[in-house]
Length: 306
Image 1 (tube, rainbow, N blue to C red):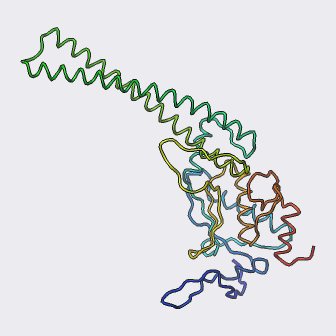
Image 2 (cartoon, helix red, strand yellow; image 1 turned 135 degrees about the vertical axis):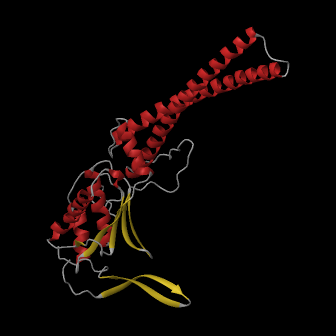
Image 3 (cartoon, rainbow, N blue to C red; image 1 turned 30 degrees about the vertical axis):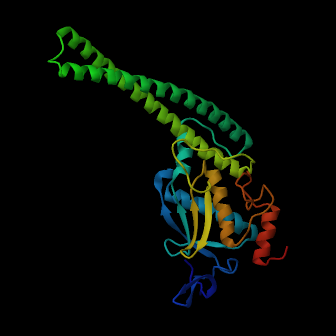
């Protein structure tokens, strides 16, 4: 960390305690072009299978996009004291991506990828419906057969015991019921795996629909509910501080663009209408450099003449 002399600038959040207004203050935060924004790594979940050093390298590459454009340091890494915390949070979003990858799915932020996943979703939901109907029938038949067996056992137990021949038949029926129960459990496990795949597809499809700005209805998961919208990453500025939370990425290229976008928000930039811009509200572009729109807004923010 450099030895820059910091001034306390700006009231970013107000809290009232017993009628006294207290300011939540962040050093130099409202003038990012005058002084670098210090950041540090916050919570880090290694379930993403990316090392801390590689994650920090991705952040460095993302910040360089903004800094190289105007040849000025805008961010600075601090091992623990940075006012901007960048968190890697593993939850159902990344879990869905990882599961589909293990199943051989190719996930891209494109219309064709969405269409392919939607076709797979339709096929799997139809398969689920058919398998669940068949399994429900099999369970009902098993329960009827099991009840008949138990009624016979109870009858003979209350009538002095069954004959040898009847005992052989009952034992054979018992073994059949055991085999049927085992088969039903296997089919239940298979159906549960299919449900997990469908629910992972639901999460990814809803995410892609948002990223691609598609006018489609949200898909519903099976046997569970999810609260809130699917966001792969978010910039947060509230009473608890300033942070960037990364929830989901399919590859390091998407992670890079996601970090670059959220760092743009940290600078104070808003969304742009250009779909190719880093600051476009959806992470659907392929470029790894600022567009003219990005650069214009950055220069305006930093008061640099065109």
